[in-house]
Image 1 (tube, helix red, strand yellow):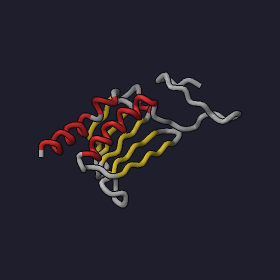
Image 2: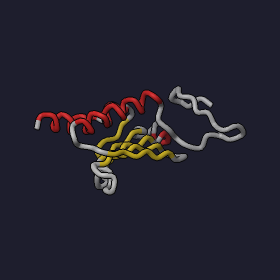
Image 3: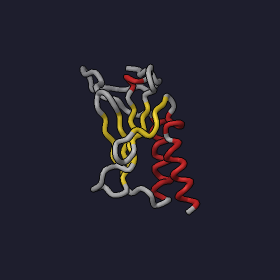
Image 4: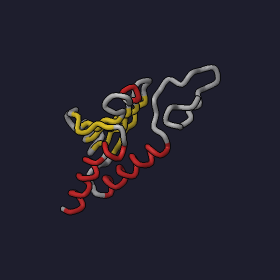
Length: 117
């Protein structure tokens, strides 16, 4: 079954895919930023969650704490405010949009500050 974003989701035989995921390009961009944040000493761990409504990537300073940043892909919001949302540590919405790069901009700025320090 082809997704609206061009990625192909293959379900087990006889079953429909029932979860949202990241495409290879999306995951590459997310993990690139994550790797640079790890190298800067800002993040140490991550988690991903895939449900029928959303795919989530969460980055942690320590795995026992709440995530410092959480990126959520929710395709049902594609036509409205955009399917990408970046949440802060306390659950506040930092950025929403239609493009992954634009939504990840606050993390990129934080990375630049970490390198300058």
